[in-house]
Length: 185
Image 1 (tube, rainbow, N blue to C red):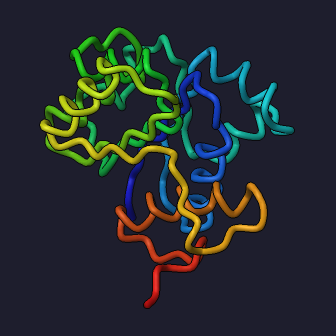
Image 2 (image 1 turned 180 degrees about the vertical axis):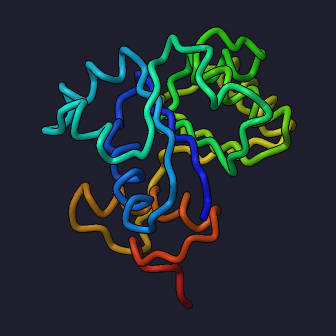
């Protein structure tokens, strides 16, 4: 069984994180969830989910300010951290090693322990500093997977676009899924 940390930050597109949790739950994968304080507001604004609904999709959840959470220790074994969506503030903190909360600290632990870190930035347009921060994380082994859905699978609704991004993440994690039609020639 895999053990995955999912962090939902204060960027538009919280549905990506929620859908990922739903899919990981279907696969019986142990999840550890952190929702930033701003993300809680955005969940209420952008979706019909309650914070409690989202937390119930995970096995464990932690408060953003809880730096003593078990996930923040390199001795706690987990496979991957996914920051979805990732705000530019969080991206900057991760890129610069500023682990002042549970999200940025677990991301720092993930990189220093050479585990898989997937960042799903959700911002447009991007400034040069945003791109530089992504490049720095990528150089350290982090995977940058922008919320840029494709169109070759002929999406018909927003859900199809959300599933495309979540399916790409599951592909990286080597979790079989049928969330979108793979490219065929």
